Amino acid sequence: MDIRFGIGYDVHQLTEGRKLILGGVDIPHSLGLDGHSDADVLLHAIKDALLGAAGMGDIGKLFPDTDMTYKGASSIWLLEQVWQRLTEKGWRVNNIDATIAAQKPKLAPFIPTMKQNIAQTLRISPERVNVKATTTEGLGFVGRQEGISSYAIASLINDAN
Ligand SMILES: Nc1ccn([C@@H]2O[C@H](COP(=O)(O)O)[C@@H](O)[C@H]2O)c(=O)n1
Ligand SMILES: C[C@@]1(CO)OP(=O)(O)OP(=O)(O)OC[C@H]1O
Image 1: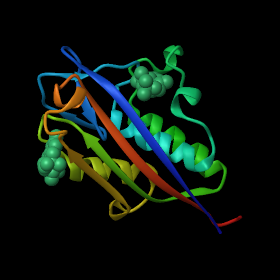
Image 2: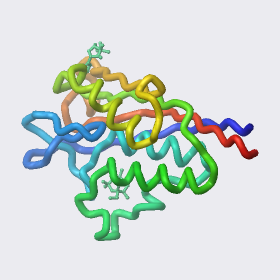
Image 3: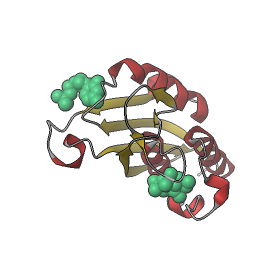
């Protein structure tokens, strides 16, 4: 049995006229995240952690932002694409832990649905997915509400190796 770990980190800029989508949840807010896809920074960090654990590079490599296929793409759909690539190589997801750094809005009420969305897409129990939120106490680009960042760690198991 082979067990591997990967980390992911992503940042997207907050801007007017965009939706704020985190963990596949459309969150009511005056600002949204800018990006080529739906800019779901939490799911991007999780995908990079999964790809990192499997030694498969990162989402920029798999889904280039120069490719119009991914213009406005749902990050849940992109997570499904990552899951399929992992599955083809015999990997299953053991657990995910992630942190969203956002000064506003209050994310705690939306976290159970984010966990549900991630677990469902990765075909694991929600109990294997942990999502946390933190402010940065008003400091830095997150504190100034210029952007939202996210960190993630993933562990994968391959029973065949
Ligand atoms: N956007 C956010 C940020 C934080 N929370 C929750 O508030 C609690 C306190 O956060 P700290 O900045 O002091 O780490 C924490 O339990 C977070 O879950 C939130 O809901 N939304
Ligand atoms: C997801 C992709 C592809 O649509 O675009 P963005 O939404 O801009 O996200 P980013 O985290 O900059 O990198 C990966 C991209 O290739």
